[in-house]
Length: 110
Image 1: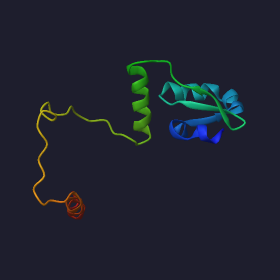
Image 2: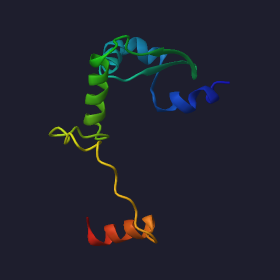
Image 3: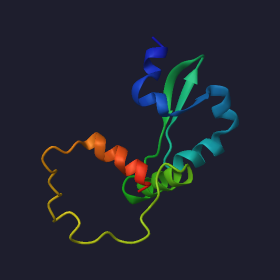
Image 4: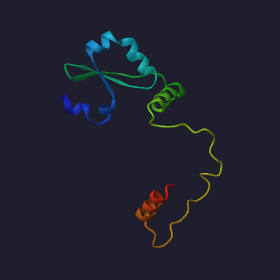
């Protein structure tokens, strides 16, 4: 039963044993403050999850800051144009292939 609980949502969480949690609680709480969730294991089985209770922008900001530090995302340096989402996307031309366009884009270095 233990391993199937580690698949899916929990598979991307940091894991800590009870001993690691006891010895490093302050560091783990700091990670939680920055948006991470910690799965606590007892003899390899999940028994608890340590996660933030803060709602709203504080928890979101911490999560965004962590993802930015990890290089997963890069925040915009300026606001997006107001008309960006109001314009309809361009329609594909007849006979065009998305794969061919992608290959051409990569060849041209765009």
